Length: 110
Image (cartoon, rainbow, N blue to C red):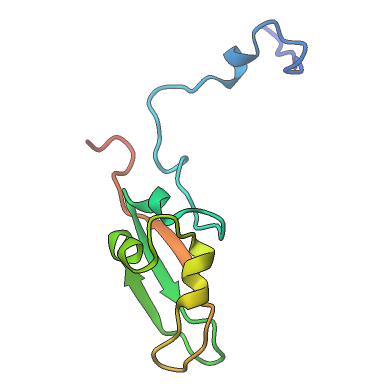
C-alpha cells in the first residue's frame, strides 16, 4: 500500500506535472459566462446571448445572435456597452441581464 504525499507547487520539481490535463479538452470547462468587460467577439463561435429584462414584474427575454450584436454595437463592443443601450420592449426598463449560453459541441462530439 502506498501513501499519498501533498507537495506544494512551488516545492515540486515539475509543477506542470501536477497541472496537466488528462485526456482531451472539455469545452464545458472552458466556457465563458458573460462578464461585463468581455468583448462580444469572444462569443462569436459556440455561444448564444440571452437577454432578460431586469424590470419589476417583467420577465421578458430574448435570444440575440452574436453576429447580429456585433453588427449593432461594433467589433470593439463589450457586454457592458450592449447592456447600456438595450431597453425592454414590454416595460421600457434599461440594463437587462445578459447571459452567454454555450451552444457548441458537448463532450466528445465532433
